[in-house]
View 1 (cartoon, one colour):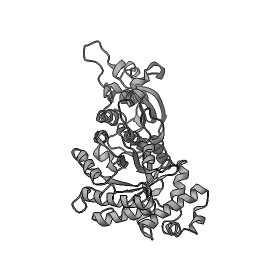
View 2: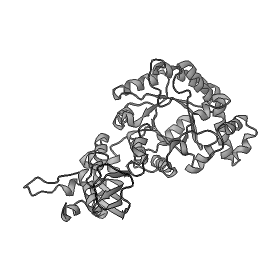
View 3: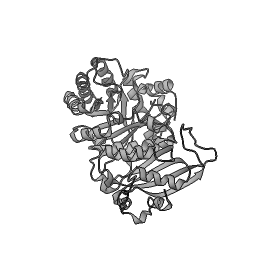
View 4: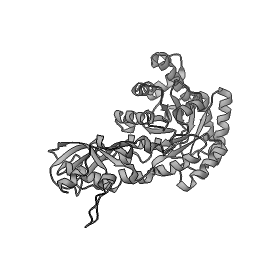
Length: 433
């Protein structure tokens, strides 16, 4: 690129109508001139070749992505991650904000992803290592999306669960049980105090535990638990499948007795989720398979908060995400960023419930609460409820007892002396924060 070519892919924020652009924050490492690399990054994801040979025209003013901000620091040691076939030259670590005109792809999730996470980004000349750190949408773009149908407040209203976290539980054993004993585990957990008993993300519509029979058994168990406890309950059924089955499985599960649906967002695809959202009669809750494959490395891929924003945009009412602690191998600041992406203002798009999870129990609830700093989250133990020494009823009770202590400002260990379920949980799972 010539200097004039490079300059055509840079802009000052005040000179743009920002309603016409989404904003993208990238970190990347490049070989050669960082300004030229950033210009290539903007060019390749938008106009690429911006005029015909021999024709006096320039499509960049309307169609080009523009670099709004660029910061670059030399890396004398070279690329932070060895990349075979990487270009040679002086290496810089860069941060860039790019404004991309959304008129290039419109309010279509597959086309959006093709632009901001496609060939033009990950094959930009001179940039072997790149990560999309964040994405922001103007109100004009958000207006074309429905977002969550129920969202955080709708889930609270359905469960009559206010001023506290919403308590989930992943029914275990997750694979192998037929519908009736599986439903009994859910029933016991509801009696103990869970709000939501859920299928594992791996439990599909399979012959030994068909979705219809499972939803019928859990639906009946849920209604019994509601009568006995006087509290609304939710059975969260996993309908992850081929896209052309989602509507059918929604209808099967809801008619049989499920009153919320789990979908593995990235394996199914966000466009499939958006289609399902337009049909859905019950809350939709996302799970995170496949996301770590994009987000685990800090120097490459996609920050998981980008996926969180996109799942909210597609219409999920709650987003289950990798949570705190070593089990999930996700930095604490990244978990917090994903929680904020569920809750922070997003134009007309409702907040969704963040559900950080991973090896949680009554022993970890206090630590999770303090790290989040509010009650606007879901808490999703698996073995912490269903592997509890006193069974799922005792496991669920231990979660409620831990919350009683936290809400009253009582040390959890002190509260456990008069609550055997909580005491057993602390002994079995350890006091971690």
